[in-house]
Image (spheres, rainbow, N blue to C red):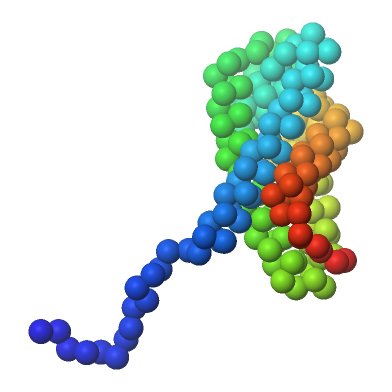
Length: 174
């Protein structure tokens, strides 16, 4: 027989269905954002005559520390780099989508925090350029800042459209 310590453990420790649905929606929105960016750069690369070149460059920077980027114009497309970068890109955006879903849920319950959520979104928009400037300057020689900005705005639009579709009654006040 065990002594009664007075501590109680809740029987149901699983997250609520609402929380699980919120994070699932966030991950789906994030993956849609990642796909939107991938499609944008696929179009730009195809128009330049080098399909899948951007994920090759980014994968080379991420997984090989930029080795081989001395002459980026002659860097051959590597399906290994494309697949590895695409996997990481999708995971990062799934996490960002989960964070966005949590922030939207918070902003819905606390309408005055809407401006803070918007401000955080703006910070994330320029985060890639800041990180690339510090850690991978060759990336900015290859990818223009405008193409990165357009990609991020398209991803944000795709994610917003998904959140609006899944949560039509969501209203956030700045």
